[in-house]
Picture 1 (cartoon, rainbow, N blue to C red):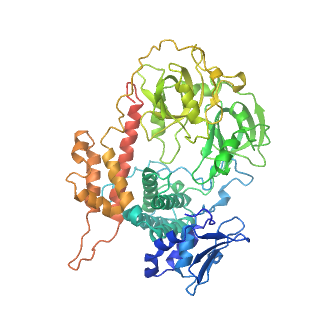
Picture 2 (picture 1 turned 120 degrees about the horizontal axis):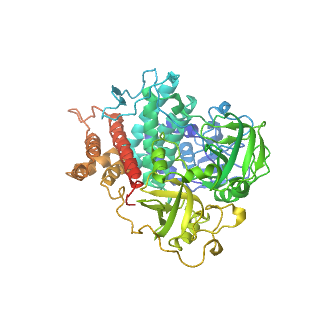
Picture 3 (picture 1 turned 135 degrees about the horizontal axis):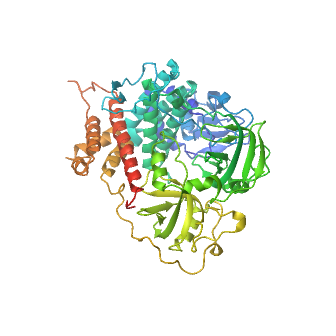
Length: 637
């Protein structure tokens, strides 16, 4: 990807690749790589890419800096616009974020709660009434199941919901087929042609008002590009998770039994919230891989209901750092985000999204309130229950939703690698790992954790978000002193008993002098990690092998190993179902029946995608159970 090139709308690239002949498609990846660094910006804002002496591709972005129409990409060769040069130039450019498909769902007068270019609704399972038009799963006692026995959650009993339209079912089925083909190809064979098929299906999903599915497809395409270009920030685990999200979303939508809310919304829908009174809890920097940056200030109502005010826009790290003290554009309230995190607002005519984001409409009026410390008011309830209960509640929420913030009092133990070991101040509490919520060195998270590590025995009150992909791991957002503890933080009075780890920097004056008194609870070295030390890593390695090398690589690795997924070890550890899923995946990857002439009799990649999805879904569920157990009484971190 050449960052000097203007972003290109996904449908423009997909159309350019679709117009190529089969012979030219075979040359597309090489042509794209060859022109990646040949862009020449022009004075009029266009960008030129030369292919030899006779072909010059010119990209002319619109006023928003994006190529959104086919006529904005031209070539001087005789085959244009159905030429290799034009498709290669478009393929070398970064993908543009999709425009909103349903702007009428957004608040007309503003959107303080917008978290990015495509904020979507949280999915939930519910009954449907329309038969599928794509992957046709059989019906089992617990819900729709695929050919390999993948069981999707049974829809809850309740009032009927509007069914998805025929166009939505057709688009979801097309996206499922494209995702299955991309999974079977993997990173190795997932070049421009495979990516274009996914982009075409994603564009169809957007036209059918399925923005969540479209966003999942774009994440996969960006992940494939990053992996093929071997970018430094690319992680195979992230691409595997993106494939899981895409396949799950497409399968549920195409089955006809999903709640229409799974379709998502291009922007958050805001509803009247009446009069609200909210108090600040903490600030959290936002820094995305797509260049967005800003801040989210978390708030609580007197009854404990969480709300938030977001200010996220393009700008990256500089925007994330500066937004922490930017003014809050909410009803004319004379507060910045730093003041709101330690203050409060009385809001009249509030507008609220389903996930608690507060909107800034024309009729919203806000008056500043005096803040409350964590020891009083709604924040005190966060620390009233064990952290394990809050984690179990987060694991029970629908897929795709962000885990709720939790609070706990901990005693600092020691630093261990890139994280800080602490123990919750409760009987039989396990050791917890505190990891930086945002490890970027320009943000204060990592430096503050290092400061805390230098004071073993220090009692600290922490508000953070549990990391549901790691055992007993918390990503802290703010810290404060423990009430009544002699050896705890000593924060300035104007900080109101809290320090936002992403913005406030802890100094020596904020710590007590001397050393800690003897800690009543035993402080032991961390024991085995129930997640990392379980044999489930073999299943994850098998899944990631399929993502990296495609179906062929997974079949080859299984064919040369008598026990490719470590089934015997999994069975001995009690993971019999995981062993069965992994075995079925390896068998399906190697199942390529051919006729007497050597032709494939079943070229479809859908059975393989079902097998991969079954193994990945079971693995995610098993890992979540181990994560929940790691937070329990007496568990070893």
